[in-house]
Image 1 (cartoon, rainbow, N blue to C red):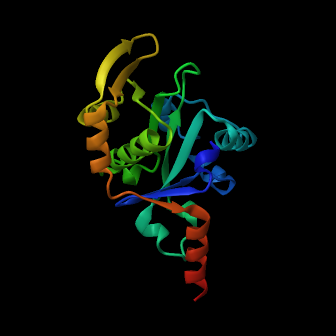
Image 2: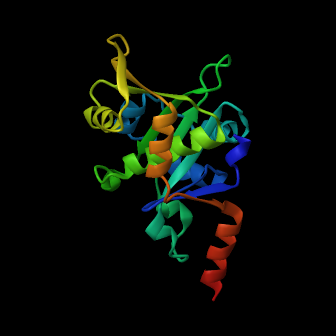
Length: 210
């Protein structure tokens, strides 16, 4: 999605940055993992297909994605950005007749970063961005029935279970963004800072050259 091609979102422990070409190889390595394939209901792609997918995420108006970085690592300019990658977060505008409905996906790909509350921070940040920048009024998540940790996280964020599909072995949860939910969400993400990604990268390189 063009709207976020030069935007970074800074949280307490994570930095959300646009999914760029230099991220693809690391992402491709992640998605060779059978566990991640199962958790994300994904099929493995070739590296060429992964590059095509990255271009799609950049160009298509119905998809918005950020790569999740370890903020502390990224502040060290001697560390390559790809080494700071720990997952991704996506919004799909799934209904052409209702652009206020969005499907949300969060993947903490690096096992060492799981079960540390990062998924919750990232989810709140992405929801805040979706509400304020994309006009989202209802979020939906579809999660494998055996992914109890993710189901539990979204329920703690007040998502409500609306259906279970035994054929696809997944549960669907939703949250409608009324005024109370919007106010609470924006209060919960008041820490989030939006920055110019290109400028942030330049500043980081200048620190390295000093």
